[in-house]
Length: 91
Image 1 (cartoon, rainbow, N blue to C red):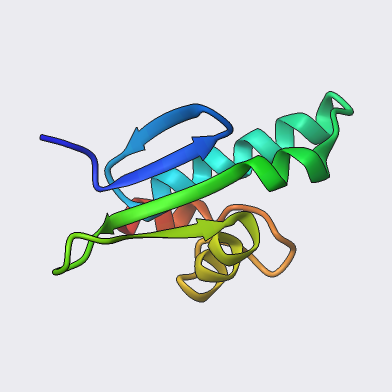
Image 2: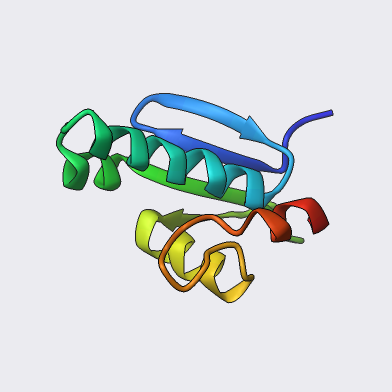
């Protein structure tokens, strides 16, 4: 079975079973970059999440900003920008 969601980090692709898991991996990469004082804005430009194919076979790509907005709307992020672990248990 192939993954429905793909987290892209430059040339690296990470297959994920759902958007919440792809977003959590993306969020953790940014958090670790902040902790190690890496160039976070540059990392954010390289990160994207590719969704499953629609009925036409086309896949939608979400930038870091668009994926974060989608995560907020799904309740995956708390008001302070932290991951909401309760929502991950439901998804």
